[in-house]
Amino acid sequence: MQQHPVPPPLDSSDLITLASDWRAGFFDAIFESFDAGEESPDIDVVHARVLDKLLQDRDVGTDVWDAAVREHLVRSWHVQAAWPDSIQGLTRLKDPCVVVVLANGTTRLQLDIIRSARLPFDTLFSSQLLQATKPNPAIYLKALDLMALHPEQTAMVAAHAYDLRAAAKIGMKTVYVQRSTEDPNEDMEAIRAEVDLFISGLDEGEGLLELAALMNFNI
Image 1 (cartoon, rainbow, N blue to C red):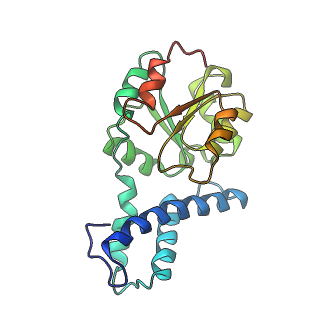
Image 2: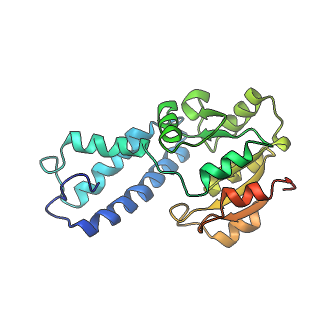
Image 3: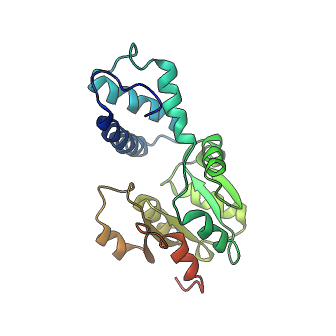
């Protein structure tokens, strides 16, 4: 957002709040689509819709941030920096395991994210590709079928509790990695009691590095 002029009704400090509200509003919209039974929502469309509403609420019109600026902001979600532990942690995990992306969104979005962040996954499954959306059990089962694996042979690693709850229901092991920007409305102690393994990803040396260090894999 800071690449663009700050809209007159806002100041630079408001951009941090706007970004945080955009992230939270995106998840609210996604969960509403889950509840409505919608499959494979286009995440770019959801991001655009949420941004438009947030800007409208802040009296920022298209005369200030026009369609081109808004499209650029939406596309910025395709380019992500990796968490400090992610690249090295995934690299270490690849020795004993196959590491796979299983994520909601378009294949293009997920591919752009892992390439921009240089995340060394072995392969990628998107909700668009599998024609099912988390937390629908079908998306997990389709991915397992393609990998020729049984649920009990696998672990879902995520920073979203809803994802792990769904994976657990079909028999997958669950690893929660706590991240500072994710699940702001969840009770971390409750999650800790639900999952097979809870790992803090808040400090350097934790997260996927800690998971890799535990990979005698007795989870």
